Image (tube, rainbow over all chains, first blue to last red; front, side):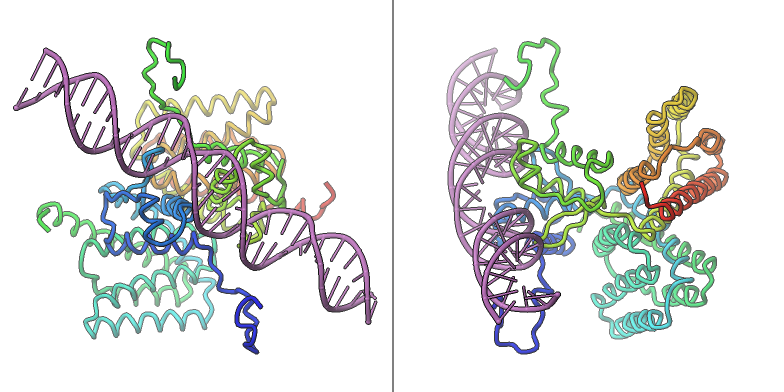
Length: 230
Length: 230
DNA sequence: TCTTAGGATTCTGTATACCGTATCCCTAAT
DNA sequence: ATTAGGGATACGGTATACAGAATCCTAAGA
């Protein structure tokens, strides 16, 4: 009698239950990524609580979570502010990303199953289609999804939990810097290296891809600095 | 009258202020590491709150923090439980640790200043002294401190924030597995590699050290499994 | 006019009380 | 012995209150 007591086959007692704090966190994260809350925005607990129709508590917990994810910085007694990624932050992000994606690739090369590889191939194809269709939003999402898939192939849970927040910030950054790039060839080659089963080859491609990506972002940031007029 | 209103030179408005949630988190983390709360222990909010003389709120936030640090796992609506590190958890911990410490070493080799190197040398000496004195607790702490110092040498803030919680769990694990090992020669060689300024050499030593450490822990865990009688 | 000292305001940090509901545990009936 | 109740417990969340820090505004003074 929790819900739908008459639904015959519904034995989903509450499988998709998600604490309010998590839903609030997801919502706030999305707003940051979508630039609804640009860098520098103060996140005032009472405001957000009122706006989302919840109490302060879930909002506080959500903000704490976003803090550990690196999206906001909180000064004790002053509250949370959406961070501005400095040049150094970006470099560090790429440093760590590279190191961890290399590891993920190596492990993926030896651990991925045929079925998983097939799934990633599909994700690649989606990106290809988005590119052909000129759908930039879908392309960006496909690129992000590809990285997530690679991560899963590693079968390393810790790696995923550590890297995911970093990816989140990277994607955030990439969206700020403009058009998603055509990474199809790049991703494709990288993927094949993993599929080949050679950890060394996979590592090499991961590293190359990470560095290429870094160069792209560096260039975009440099342009943005020269022309700060939006 | 915040504190010592009569102290003449005390213009430290409140520099060392720490929110209650952080102090509760530190306390709980310490209890977990010290095995006051062994794996499997339920952390009941009201109990801890009453015991520490605070309200449930800071306790909740502390538990959330420990969750992201990987010390406890919370099942929605059932509360937090101190985790038991599985064999796979341990392997993953070492995987990620190795990748990140290699990066830290490389960056440390090119970025560490003379003064910093001197400080680390002192930390090493402390470990040496603890070893000679047979002070196992101090030896363990010195080993932990050494890793922290290397991390700082990298001048990579993100690397530190990502790796620190992992180190925490690792140290927790090491304390569970028994005597701290004599890593003086190991650490010393590793340090000199960094001090030499060669990223490649530093990376090589970091990798070697990580793998050696992993082997030690593997062996200890294997022994523990064969003789589960404490 | 610029500076500065108050003073009002805002917001965080924390406490307290309370409700609904999921879970767990114990007991009693079959 | 198994199973169905039926509390007891504890989490998730709401509402409210309040002290103190931070900030902002304003008005008096140099």
